[in-house]
Image (cartoon, rainbow, N blue to C red; front, side, top):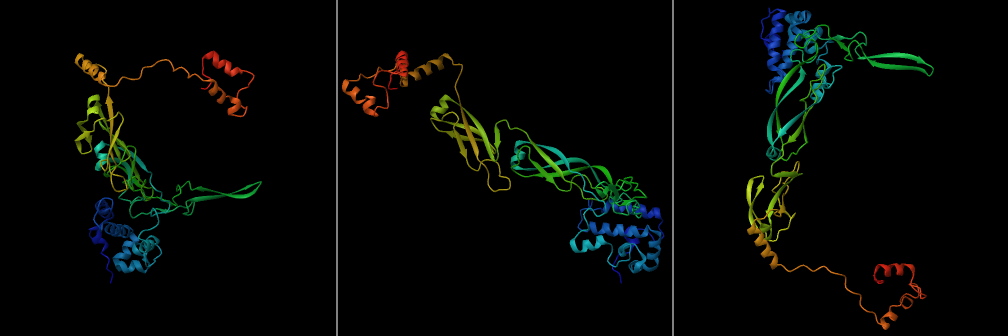
Length: 408
């Protein structure tokens, strides 16, 4: 005995229901049970049962067989329902593939095409990018029609095979040329490559197979993202044509600048301004961090541009454990406008430092004795390869004119 539910019970109608009553009941339940709307675990199975029931009962011949013989009559070759168009005992080829691989052919129908990808921008604060967050987006997009399930055809009146291409979706034309015969293959103009023609259009989508809707999506932003990064949401793009799979949604992140902190990958950088007294004597100052302002000890004698590194105080590393560093870069500011008291103090301070060396003329060359001149003679030092013994060359004369020592 069959374990299938009664088709009239699935649709919630009486056995005397008219075609209009069947259609109205199917539309109401389809909106309620479609897997894109209903997130219950058995929603997909219920939706398949609903579509199967309506496909049989909306067809006069199949409904007559079902009323007389029930599910067994359809399996025996009466057509429709789980028996398929050819009376195959396990349903159509999509059901066979689903029983083995957990899903039918990609797109679910001949000529199905994947939907387009969508792109949008999401603005984040500096803290949201560092610590992660959840944000909501409103995305206008084309979605598969719930009434016809993306086929574009009125439920119960499926598309028919295209007579122009015999269901292949392609038209082959044989042409002769000087180089011989060749075949030109183009998409069918009548069915636009689908292989099927919709004769009764779905009233919800007017045969398009998709409807325009605005969806509110929740985006989970992981901790440690940075400006201009992208998050991909699979299957949240445009709906595919003729029941094809949906495209993806790419969310590009725009991170607002922080007034005191900067990012360098996972490292966070802050610039610490110091006056000359703080840099020379050392000081206890406040620095900005990801956790708020904190006290920081600047050692005496800190130079301009010095970098202090605090480990594991930066942003989380994406797809890795640990965090970056907090880099504190000093900026020693020299005063440009001094009060009389400050000028006097700086003058007194300057007097305590050692005076710089006084600039003056270069020292005179050390006199050379006859013995040293003989020892440094080019003929004796390099075997006669230096200056000529007959007199000074042109280079030596130029050096003399410019007052340049010959040994330099």
